[in-house]
Amino acid sequence: MMANDRDALIRAALTPPESVQPPAELADDIYRALVATPQRRAPLGGLPVGRWLPQRTASLAWLVVLGSLLLAALAILAIASRPPSILDGVVNFHGNPGLTGEMPGPGPSGSVAIGWQVALAGPLTSLNMPLARDGQLVVADGNGTVTTLDARTGQLMWSTTGFGSIIGTPVLTAGRIIVAADDGTVVAIDAATGVEGWRRSIGAPTRAPLAAAGDVALVGSEDGFVHLLDVVSGAELRKVDAGGPVQRSPAIVDGIAYVGVLGGRVTAFDVPTGTIRWTTELGEGEVLTPALTDGILYVARGPLDLSEPHEVVALDAADGAIRWRWSGLTVERFFITAVADGAVFVGSEDHNVYRLDAAIGTGGLFFETEGSVDRLGAIADGTLYVSSADRHLYAIDPVSGVEKWKLEVEGTPTVPVVIDGRVVVGTHLGKVVAIEGSSTP
Image (cartoon, rainbow, N blue to C red; front, side, top):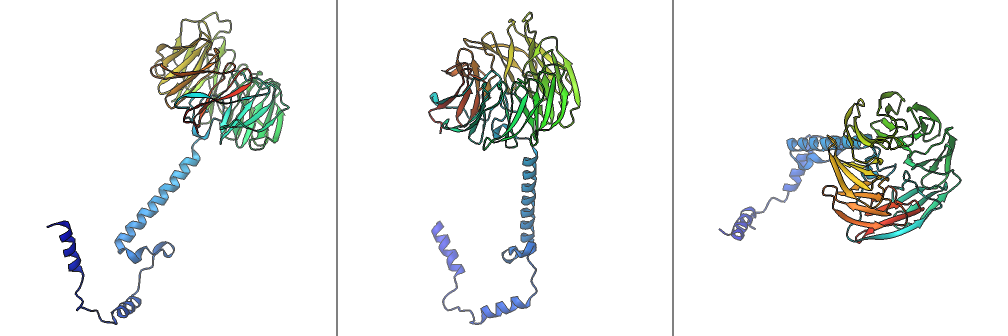
């Protein structure tokens, strides 16, 4: 039997002949019977589920609805309680609170070129990079000016001046830009308007990039302390003795800060209380910007006089125990360029980038440039971005080491910011440069 014949047969069976007519009063009789019969009230404020579903089916449907609402509520609570992710923007030095260099992305695709370029009032150091959030770029320069730009066009949104030389990157938190100047002055600025909220002195020069944990700003200083300030009022909540001049940003994960100092010590402490969890002495010299992921803290360190080879050290974040050490053949300084996908990328003043296994510390030469790689890098969407003193930004495959592209900029580029189809870098000549691809919006 064909499908059309079957359909016709079903219609015929369900359609009574014209000779069969229901009594005229049948509809009224049905209505009166329904009214006279006690009806089950619809649950949850009278919503009429029971009117069109059998009782058991309706009950099951309501269980599904209630379960869905409960799951939605739990999801909302989970999202609200977890720490901000890098997808919220680039709000502190080196991309995220763990300082691994992982960026939101995406980077530029297709053929790349400079999309726009803006001149600042002063230069940017190797510790100072643009920040990005909600389509806005924030840059603080060596002349004490804080500038905000439209990330798509480079157009000036607002700027404010009157600070001392700014060496370290500010931090964005709670709708404010927290800036620390070289003279020890810390200022909070409204991120939307540029209006100054408060200003205080911590009593010692500060050159390190800032960090934040919620409404607490962490300011490292030359007096050997990390000063913890209330973001709203500027009040100093406490200060933690780090054991030596703090010249690099702390990494912060799960309310614990990890900071290395000039003198060779690494310290971990609780941000809410200031309680020190552990300290580890790595040897005389300097400890550079740390990076923390998967329970392991990675630092580069070595003697200031370059009398011995510098090294990369992996420490257990729980107790500071040393997992492994790696040193190259050079006495030049190392820097943790980025950490991602089981690899530690190490830049060096010897012009090279090294790739190490994050678990065991084995590895070696990965990529060569023509200048010092003493600026930290970035990684996003399967591309490693490296800034070199040869005035080029390099895009590299992080597995093979194959160069995807390189682009020359005006001055030595700082730490790159990778977001919304662009790579944005500042330079030591006071430029902010946006590198875009042929498909960048």
